[in-house]
Image 1 (cartoon, protein in one colour):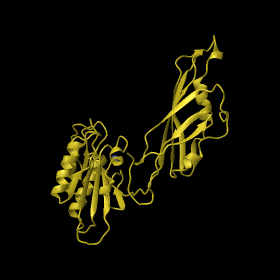
Image 2 (cartoon, helix red, strand yellow):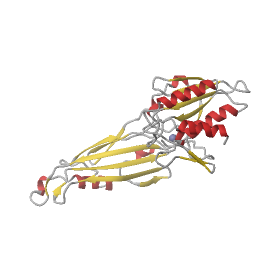
Image 3 (cartoon, rainbow, N blue to C red):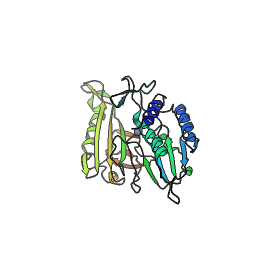
Length: 306
Ligand SMILES: [Zn+2]
């Protein structure tokens, strides 16, 4: 690492930029990029977009380099400490290397590369909290057909795709009643949830697809028929269409019953940028809605999870 790069990285992490409060950092970056000769502006959402002309060559296809400008918490008042060739935070905050290390790499590369094609640079806001910046980015300003995401925690890895991610929050509503005095009047939401979960295929569904129920909550007291139960599930797949083919297996919940508990679900966050596509299926009369967005695997790119 060059001294300049280390100095720039430490300068950048000292500027607070927790998700939603990146404006001051992106203004700083805007100034740096303009001093380096870039045409740089913010789009209407506050994402930074910049372009550098080719250097030392002509006629080359432009490439996109992309980073994010926000950090997770606690990211206020970061004081980096350089010792024995390693930069760390003081311990009471994150360091902010995610993704300012990527930004530092891009800036240094653009300063020293003797030859490069036209480079478009996109630095998004609010990546860590759901990729909101990228979803709102002014894509009309990007002409490159190949992009590289500088947001990885290893130096020697190129990620060329990511799984579609389906987060499923299920809430089941039954009917409360005293378990000893009047059990006939109750409908157990816990039992309904148990049947629904038992009907699911979980674990590794095929070579590229996994599913899991990770959290279940329900009931209040031992002698009360529980009126509510909720669980959180997820499904990941390298093939976006595959999870929709694994929604259930034949089981006790296959036929809706007249007095079946009502269940509602709401979509969770998606892992990939783009508009989520709702899909639905049924399990024991309850409606599940699947949300996800297709990974872009056609173009090689580096990637890291938000
Ligand atoms: Zn990141």
